[in-house]
Amino acid sequence: MKKVVKFGGSSLASPKQFKKAGEIIRSDKTRRYVVPSAPGKRNDKDEKVTDMLYACYDAASSGTAYKKLLNRIKERYVEIIDGLDLNLNLDFEFDRIEENFLKGAGRDYAASRGEYLNGILMAHYLGYEFIDAAEVIFFDDQGNFEAEATNRELSERLEHVERAVIPGFYGAKHDGTIKTFSRGGSDVTGSIVAKAIHADLYENWTDVSGFLVADPRIVDKPEVIETITYKELRELAYMGASVLHEDAIFPVRKEGIPINIRNTNKPADKGTLIVESTLRKPKYTITGIAGKKGFCAINIEKAMMNTEVGFGRKVLGVFEKFGISFEHMPSGIDTMTIMVHQDEFEEYEQSVIAGIHRAVEPDSVDLESDLALIAVVGRGMKATRGTAGRIFSALAHARINVKMIDQGSSELNIIIGVKNVDFEGAIKAIYDIFVTAELEN
Ligand code: ASP
Image (cartoon, rainbow, N blue to C red; front, side, top):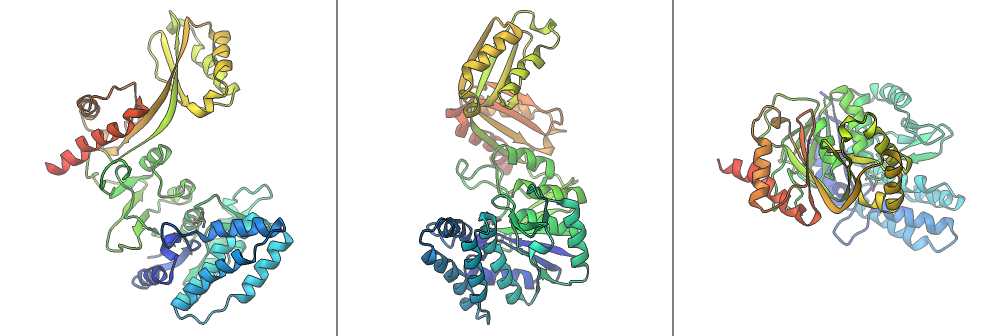
């Protein structure tokens, strides 16, 4: 049994947090490969080391004062080293970083040092081997991640290493230039390492006890999702639910390796298990609810639209021309509605309307603004009768008007369009009918 464990920034922000991570790792011998983030915030007002590094580099490379900030970054590591009683001195590393900053080594290089230094520290603390991600994670000259070359190198390298720390978030191009993933990218590194060693499990340790059924800013103390499939997660993540970097799914998904989201501050909590597929019944009919505000609808009407071959293609071609991607396209016999992000559309509003007139000569085009989309997602909905009925009666009871309905053919999700002002109320009503009510039964 082999596990990869990734710890997020808040899990490694202070000596106290580092100790918690250390205990977690030591309590299970199969936790053999560790991927740390850079130290995050110790409290709400604190700064992330990654943000400090960006700011410090910007100052140093533009010839403004940077030394104080560099010292503050160093203090963050010294605090951890002292708090853990480690016999480790990072002076040499900091001298080199300063030199490279002044030489203009790049913002990616700068940001990556947060993870690099934390990796050295973690390896020292655990007595594990340190492997610099720049030696095993590759990007091409354009900065695209090279999955195959990385997998080859990393699996070869780790084959004979019993225990190692590989810092998250970065790798290198072939000329040695450091390149990072997008923000939050240590999640991706963890997934890449898990794939390379054929891990049995990828544990992602963070500061929440897993994915929640709904956004806690809308629903009071929502339940944690125990098991979720990659497909369900993708639906929810697309609609705004976030805990894990989206790109972290792909490397492990193909290999059938589950991800377990865990809470460093509550290690006894089971967290959320993300799997390819499962026989485990979801606790409730629905797995999760997520949504986004800020959409608008373009309603197109034309008598006998249904007989016109190519109507939809021509309409969508107009949106394509302006680089606007559409979210949903509910249609009637003589009507068709395109839902798009309002901020993407506003700039081209009149040109799109004119374009539609030219392309399909409709009877009318009208617009409706300030709409929200809510996705109700769950593998349990597939075989269950009445799910849609329950959603709509809950919304009717809450006096919320449904503007649009779209059920994917997978029966994995039902998307509902409501007015922005009804967004929170709708999510609460749906949560209550499925989760609160099912809990009570
Ligand atoms: N430290 C990086 C960030 O703040 C990457 C990560 O934590 O995953 O985005």
